[in-house]
Every structure is written in C-alpha cells, then in structure tokens.
Length: 344
Image (tube, rainbow, N blue to C red):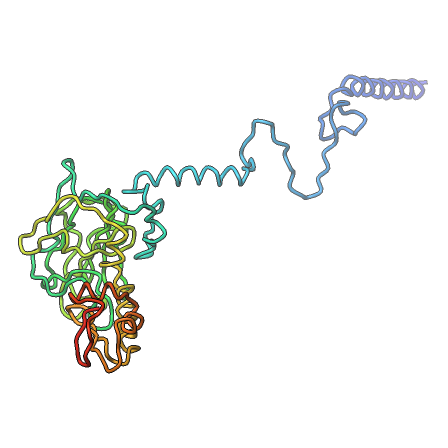
C-alpha cells in the first residue's frame, strides 16, 4: 500500500513539473531575439540579411553628396571663366590676351598689330617713372651685327653689378635661356616689354609686380655673351625696337615720354631681317645690270656704257626717264657719253 502511494506522488510531481514547463514556454514564446527567430517570426516589412562575405552597398539619401558626380562640361566652363578673369590682373591684357611664362617671344607683331599706328606713353604720373637699368657705356647698338641681327643695346658692366627695372610692370619671364642666359622680361601697362639678358643671378620670379628702379638681378656673362654686359631690349607686341630712339643713354633720361609706332617704322627701320633681305635683293639687282649699277651711301649710281640710252637705263634699273632726269638735273635730250655717272 505504501509503495502504491509513493508511486502516485512520483507521477503527480512529474506531471506538475511538465505542466509548469509548458506554461513558462507559452509565456516567453513571443519574446525571441531577431537573430534567433526564424523567417516566419519577422516583421512583414523586414527581410533576412544574407551574409555572403561581400561588402554591403548602402543606399544614399538624396541629399548625400559624399561622392556626387560633377559634370565635366561644368568644370571646363568654370575654369575658362576663372582664366579669363585672371588675365585682367596682367598688364596690357587687352593687347596680348595671353600670359606666357615659358616662351621668350611668343607674340607676332604682324598678326597682333592691326592698326596703322599706335601712341605709346612711356610713363604715367601715377607710376615710378623711368630708371636706367644700369648706368654704363653703350658697347653695341641696335642693328645688324656681323652675320646676325642685334635686337638690343649692350651696356657695359661688371659681373655682380645691380640691374634694375626700367619701368613699372610685372615679370613675365625669369629663367635661364640658351642664348639670353639668365633673362628677365617685364611687361608694362602700355604694351611694351623690356628684356634684361646675360644676368649672373635672377632676383625676381614670374608674376611678380615690380617698380621702376627695383632690383631684378645681377649683371653677368651667361648665354651667348662675350664679356660681362647687360643686353637690354624694348619690344612691342613681340617686335624689337631701337631703345636709343627713346632713351638718352649718356644722360640716363628719356628723350620723350610719348611716341608713335607705325608699320612703316617697323618695315623701314626695326625689322632687321626684312631690311637685310631687301639689301641683298638690291645687291643682286646691281649685279644683274652688268656691274654698272653700284649701291653707295649716296644712293644707286649707274655708269653709262657705250650704246646706253635713258630709256634702256630706266628699264634696267626699274625706274623712269623722268626720275633719272630729275635726280641728275638733265633733259631727255641729253647726250650720254660712256663713263658718265647717273644717280638712279
């Protein structure tokens, strides 16, 4: 009997333990962490995350500009606008429309000089005026020298002497060049550019604003140079002009503050290569007239030979009978004798 009662108690106890366990499971069934819950227990708006080992791509919001692509055309237009505006900071941008800090003489006078003449003021009341780059003796002038043109004026100095800017302006070139050596080129507000060559040392840099009389370098003997000197040039739109037409080197002053530059000046005086070619053409013309036409410092002289007439001479020398008569003070009926000299 006692064994039967003990067996009842045992099964009852086991029953209550199982019943309490089922109750506890029923209470906690709705509280399951997401990372343990199966798919059918997730919120309908959520999807299971698949871990495939790849980097997850996070969708950006509309206002997220971390890696927003920029239209290349927009960049070009912006750069062009900035470049155009920046040219306004350079002297005489309306004439040159460019600022080249690498090429010594990138400008073409024939292409850039559209009008017949231009008035140039060397100094203005608001600037620092004019200062001699170096007070020294002129050793070589503008013009054809030996077998090549010399586009500047050479001023004697010693290596290490101070060279200064002649006018207010901005440095466009400051570098070593094969022929000029250490060279500084300054552009001025009036369109002129001044060149300072064969320096032993450069003390300025491209883009630097400079005033007349301010130190730009030290004299030297660099580049194609034989002996220490300063090679000084004045150029307008790339065309070299004779600085001695405007500067009194003996007194260190300007001859005049305003001058007019014309195409005729360039063709007849400053374009050295063109002048040289024309001189050679004249010499060839003289040789083509049987050696009877000579070019002298007084002009062309023709020596009359046997059988010559004024008409024949005019044709040979590409002139007219009227011109020959006028230059020599003779009439058309003048009898020509062999050996007679006529101005052509």
